[in-house]
Image 1 (cartoon, rainbow, N blue to C red):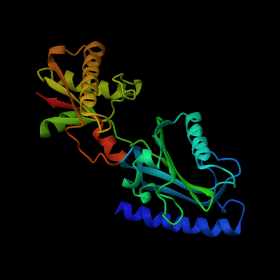
Image 2 (image 1 turned 180 degrees about the horizontal axis):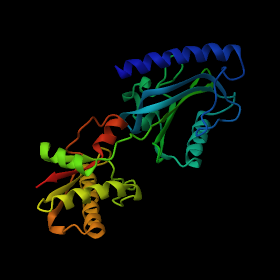
Image 3 (image 1 turned 90 degrees about the vertical axis):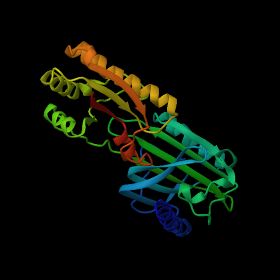
Image 4 (image 1 turned 120 degrees about the horizontal axis):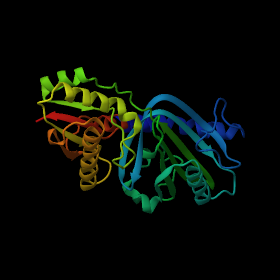
Length: 302
């Protein structure tokens, strides 16, 4: 369903692009460059759309397409005569680097997977995109308020370089902190409680300062139940390999255990830890919202 929506949406955008570019040299009214992706000198915005929320298909690795969601800006560009596709693509990639993006994939048609790709997955219409001559770039910017994903899909039509740039701005999901009383109730009912207020550095087990309120509540719950022993279990999303995520989740669980022992005086023999990686998801891993739900720490009564 998403795939069909993407095709239809961008078919409309491309029609607009072809119509506007023939009648005006200036940008389409109401449009503006996204501040993080900028503009290639001499290019023209020929179609523009800004949605408060939508889903976008992105590829972080060849032939691996995933879905991200959030506020979406789509821009269709026509580049000046004489501009080369490789030059335009390289300029976009450099701009992402200047803004602090991590470029996950930058490839041509052969490197991207050749004809195994469907062009529409990148939000383009075959009416102007050449499947045998295109460039695709995808980058991610990590931010406390939510990641930003930017993609570029460019091709050449009748000697003119055209591209669609899509920027998806995620919003960090606002999970409420779980109080000690809620932990008591959840564990009494189900034997476990999922915690989303424990934050770690990216790809690391270092607990961030904003985790303190949740650590306070865990310690309060354990102090109120002195005979209880628990297992602290770390969970990740499915980005990366299974061995990597099993190790990362175990290290994060160990960091929580150590914080409770060293910072709150909880007896170490009451606390065990384990890492489940992405083996016990509670939501889909195909969207960022689902992955955010899967990244958690659970307390399980032993």
